[in-house]
Image (tube, rainbow, N blue to C red):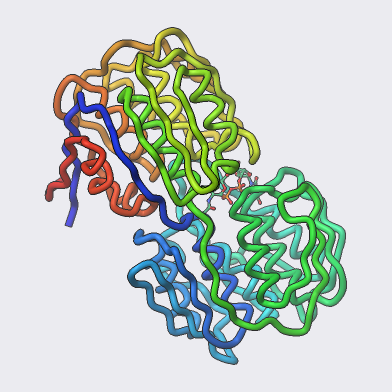
Length: 419
Ligand code: UD1
């Protein structure tokens, strides 16, 4: 059933909120479970629809998998299917992370390519060339990416760009390859570090995660483990922006603030007072935010996944901001929806120029992806009436209990049935 949100503007968000494990980590950890026969258990798992899709993908490969109450249990048989040409895979982009584990375990992987993506073209050339360096033959065939390798061997691989997905697929293939793989210009995101920690606990030999160069020496087999998923820095960052936008006072727990260092620095520049703790932070904004410029970059740069929240804040800040998107070419598509809410925003190539105004004007708006949807809800909190946000199934893919948490912080947001 289709649902939408009714967001009433004007509330100041105050209180505390906890974040669960990161969507962008748990899906890869679930996929990495394929590397070891037996039962893997993940804790701190977010209650989001992408986890349910990933359960279906693993079941389609012959595993038993279930997710409930913050826990995922996956039992991997001795023999798994190498064929992930299934509908569940096409549903969401992240399922391409089964490519590395399937190539390593089955010597052959057929993975359906996901459909078009609202945030831009997402090719797999670096995933393919990394596996090819290790001896695989890859091709795109009948809507699937196919990788075949009688034997994977360690290699020196240098990525053109520190792609998160390519780094993950190369790592999860290299852990069972013969010899040593040196991956240069690797992604440094906290979710990559989380994956490496779990792989190491499974018996993999990995060094250098969190730096540009990761070295992996292949082993014969891995064993299943229990693992606690790293906190979701994008959800935590969304709450930080919600506090700043509503001139609120929000404490966020369940997150290492180091993972949001630049994000919190940007909020300080916008006028927020920020306190950090070992596993959380507090953002207090007691006056209208000041305009700040942003450019998205791979970690530790400003995350592209928080760009919609940054834009939302800039639309109600004092002054002019320039936001530069360097990761996904179509990520400004949602700016038209922001304009519908009265935002003064002009797109020029991969920059958007925003002149902040005191208040936005309520309107019906449509989410095009997870983060754009969350950004529109935040914008609705600063509008002069009730904003209807449609296509909220996108938001449900990445934000557990979004409406409930907003209400707990004092917002007036309701989920209602209907187109
Ligand atoms: C992951 C995250 C996504 C986040 C992104 C960047 C998941 C499920 N998704 O996506 O939320 O926004 O990292 O932090 O974890 N590229 C190529 N060729 C390749 C691979 C990537 O050209 O073979 C390009 C992409 O088109 C994009 C850029 O590299 O322009 C970054 O993509 P990548 O880091 O791979 O992002 P994802 O892993 O898809």
